[in-house]
Length: 130
Image (cartoon, rainbow, N blue to C red):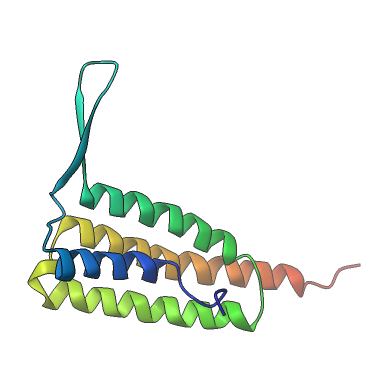
């Protein structure tokens, strides 16, 4: 069941929840960390969402090395997540931010890399040699 769930959907849903339920913006500052250099690193909600999205993209790519029916369903659902995110980015003003564009690009990379890795893994599985 959970093998078919596209992980990028979690990040898109989290963005929706933050925008619609909390009323916060992506520029809302979470904390500030003082670096050794003396520079102040301000971490925003948008930064945190993109970091979380990158971690989930890595896990999704690792998951795409498997071959099977659940992987194909996962890729189809990932394509659906990409389409929904793209429509939100184009149509809804709350989603017209650089943070959400980065999430759309992560979803696009998930779709392209997922299909590429799965096709390569399937080709390797079906190779008949001497």
